[in-house]
Image (cartoon, rainbow, N blue to C red; front, side, top):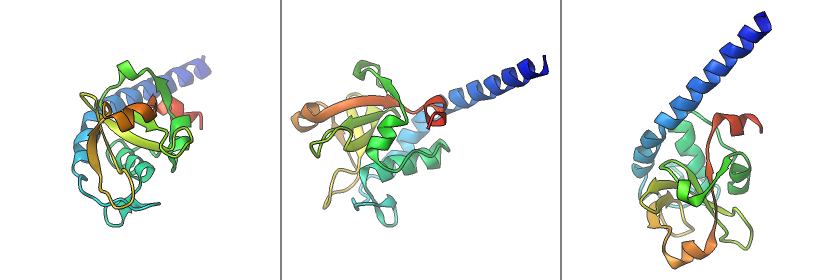
Length: 153
């Protein structure tokens, strides 16, 4: 009986964490918008030094949601829950094949078909439309960050 109650308590904590994550995704998008204009830097993971795509996503999730994602885009894709493109919600991750390999670029969906990301050298964190031909042709998948998916890593 005590094992059952212990497991129930853990499940309740897990559900609370899950709803907390979902509730904070709007904070995540608002926070990410505060980094518009920060320069791209390969391997970068802070506003002070600049961000690459996965460093930006990782920093936003750590700072606003308190979850630590893996460091690169492919690992982030693997550590998150697959969702359909039509199910995208603000805070979800969008992945693109920009280097002739799947999941080589990642951004944060902000709504209305747009995402925020650190695109490439010589550029800055910005918002772009997923409907632009470049991104539409390279779209690789959508993922949702959930405590369950991260726990499996």
